[in-house]
Length: 328
Image (cartoon, rainbow, N blue to C red):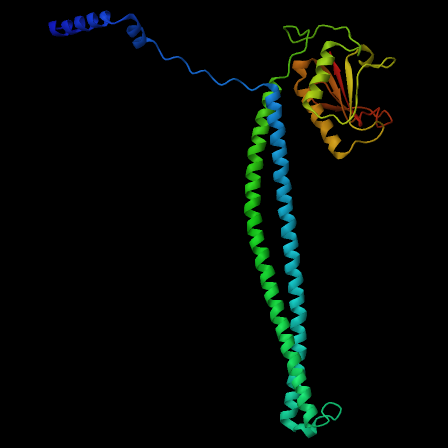
């Protein structure tokens, strides 16, 4: 390496001396990194749920608006179809009238008034009157046809314009719905992160036994699971947990039945879909809450997929009217 020149050494010495003469605050400020910008606080669970509710309402309104537009289009198309039918009828009437007038005119031209049948044209005055009457009728029919054509054109143009508008509105509604559903998905994922861990979870992922407690005679893990289901879903019917004199986990305080009908009857389509979502949610949070298995629609799932169960003879026994969740 080349030796430093006296000039460069002098510059370094002057710079060091000047820096040492600075006040302590100035020196520290010149070498301290700027403080990190604090991130915005995470929304609370109640705030997330409120936002989710608003977005769900928004999506429902968008879908309702879209359906109303489709109904308007269908009515406009029916109006155009009816106008077209009226036009066809009027055009046929016009053809008939024109044929009548043309025949009379031809007979008068070829044979003169006296040669026309007496019951049609008894004399010249009546012949002229009849021709005038037919001509007036023809003009009236022509006017009605023109009006029918105008009506059909107007209805067709309105239907086409409405179709274009609905297509644009539908595209916008779909875009807004997709945006809202993306946000809803994000919020649901955040809510999933807020699902707490059940008590008694060992470091190896197993669960320590628990005794039932409280007036509801269920374990703390079962109580937490029940509360989380009630918090995440709008349940249509009662929830039954402790039940003495039965088999399985109910008398141990380690199971709950989430009813999707009044009992003994098949759920509605909406409640059947709700049961699917509850079962899926429970399996997804199995490791957090300490689930043992879920039974729903004559199937059981321990966390590794659904397995069909034998027929027990009734809607309730086959778990078609309720989601059964058992805990470790």
